Image (cartoon, helix red, strand yellow):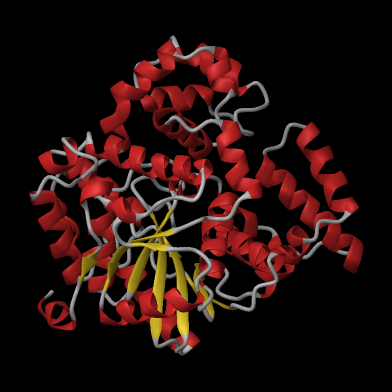
Length: 424
C-alpha cells in the first residue's frame, strides 16, 4: 500500500483542492490518501466556515480516503508550528510513504535549498537574523535576509530566484514541511504541485478555481452560497449547503466579535503578555487599541504594523478566546509531539488505513473520544482544548445539538461507503 499524506484546511473544499488531490495521487502513485486537517479554528486564526465533520465529509466525498484532525494547539498557530504538528502527526502514523503539497513555485529546488538552511541553521544565519530583527524588520523579512546571507556566503551571490519565496504563503508552508521532515530524518518522499487559479488572498470568484478566502468572502457578503457552486465540486457544494440548512454554518470571525471585545476590555496587561507570540511591545499596543475600537477589524488595524501582520494578531485574538497561554503552548510547540489523531471522516479505503495504523502508528487514532483515556495530565489538557474549541464554535451555530452540548463528545466519525459515494 502506497499512502499519500496531505496537510490541509479545506475551508471549504473547492476545485483547486480537487485538482491538487488528483494530481497528488498521480505524481505519487499512491493507492490511498490521508488528509491532516485543521479543526474548528484554522492556521490564520479564523473559524472554519462550517463544522469540521462537514468539511471532512466534503473531502471524503471528493476522493480523500481518511481525514484526521490536527490538534487545535497546532492548527491555530504560526506556519512553522502548524507544519511541525502536521509533519510529526504524519510521521507517527508510521505508514505514510509520500507527501504532496501545493506551492506557488511548483518545484522543490528553491524550497528544498531554503529548508536545508532552516533545518540546520549556521552561526551566520543566527547572526543575520538577529541583526535584521534589531533593525525593526518582521520575522519573515529577517528570515529571508538571513537565508540570503547564507546563500551568498556559499555561492558568492544571492540567488534572485528566492526573492519572492518568503512572500508566498504556500511556499512558506512547503519550506516548513521540508524543514521538519529533515529535522526528524523522515523517509517520507516529498512532491509539490504548482498552485493554479486564484492567488491565496484573491477574493475574486469569477474563475472555476478560486481561493478559499474568495469563496468565504463571497458567502459572507452575499449570504447566498448557491453563487459559488461553480467554484466547488458538486458533491462538496451539496454537502456544504446541507450543512448550512442544518445550522452548522456559515461561521465567520465576526460571530465571535462581542465575546472577543469583552475579553479584550477585561484583560490585564499580564493577560496579554501570557498570550503566545505577544512580544515587542505588542501588549502596550493592545492595551491602547482596545479602548478606542469596537470591532475586531478596527482593533487589528490599530495594532498591526510592519513587524506584526494581520494574521498574527487574529491568532492572538483566537488564543484569547480559546484560553491558550504561552507556557501551555510552548511545551507542545517545542517539546511534545501530537499524542493522538482524531478520526473525522473516512471511506472503505480509509478503513484499510485505520487497520494498518493499528499496527504501525505510535499514537492512538481516536474514534470515540469518550473511550479515549489520556495517559497524563498534559494530554488531558490538550484534548480539553480541542473540546473547548468545539464548544465555543458550537455557540456560534444555529444547530441546537451543537449549541447545547459538547459536540466532540457526541459526534462520531463520518463513514461514506462506496455505494453512498456514488450518490453524492
